[in-house]
Length: 320
Ligand code: UFG
Image (cartoon, rainbow, N blue to C red; front, side, top):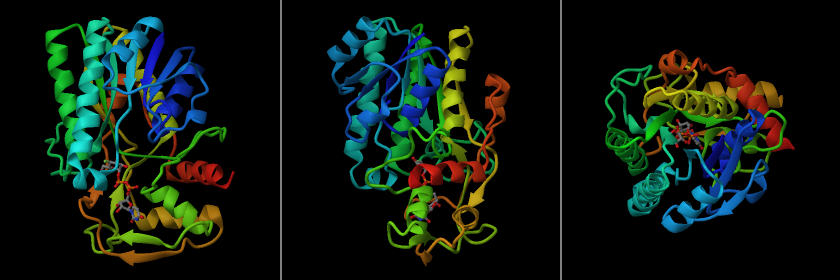
């Protein structure tokens, strides 16, 4: 199958392009390289383009005889989205609508969409199942929810089928060390903690030590990027086999607090991670942990890596 991977030069996109290729499919990467890395596109053709460029997208779908799309391309900085929502609505929403329009016009009917647990906001109950009400608390999460809803209605009115995959905290790196997490600016806990322990940046700030959790620090469900990549390919097979559209969580079902992440990293690095308590970061929920049972039921997918695997692979990538 020939698959267009928008945002395929980015973190999760590049790992998924590699997995598609490993499973005998042909990834065609479409990325504007604003945050992506050209050198992370090694598994098929690369096209530099904007989602808003409808004609370019249509031409690309035609020329490469694309049969399905995995849509990652989006801005994903929650803090930035609070300050500049317009940037997020323009890129994440209008860009996605342009992509769906191009797919409709070229009769490409399968899409796997990169959604987020940020669509749930502050959940009523944890672990979070797909039955949880989606009430985003930032524009980033809102843009992901709007695209999920657009896909829902397009799927009612056309042959389009979609899978919306709501990831929890993507982390880790490709086990062969070929690609990894490389954001500019970096805001995520695991790469920042690794750089702090390697002395490449100032001590980590622990955002909030007064949460109602085991140790007062915020709890997240860290999911290995290779597990996420496998889930995307499984979701594509599921749709291609004629099954219905669906939305599902991708997480491990196990939460780790910031302090637990730092303790585990200390074991791998062999030294303590320099870290200082700091005030809570605006918009951070206390605890986000997935109930991943629907993904297992529908796709036969389960995370294979735990926090220690994630940290070992991320550490290897950062020390390379
Ligand atoms: N954290 C720190 N110090 C830091 C960075 C993070 O203590 O320097 C804490 C955060 O407060 C949070 C946890 O580490 O409790 C994880 O933070 P990340 O920034 O790594 O990830 P988030 O949970 O904020 O964000 C992730 C995805 C987003 C998505 C969001 C949903 O990266 O794309 O989950 O809540 F929107």
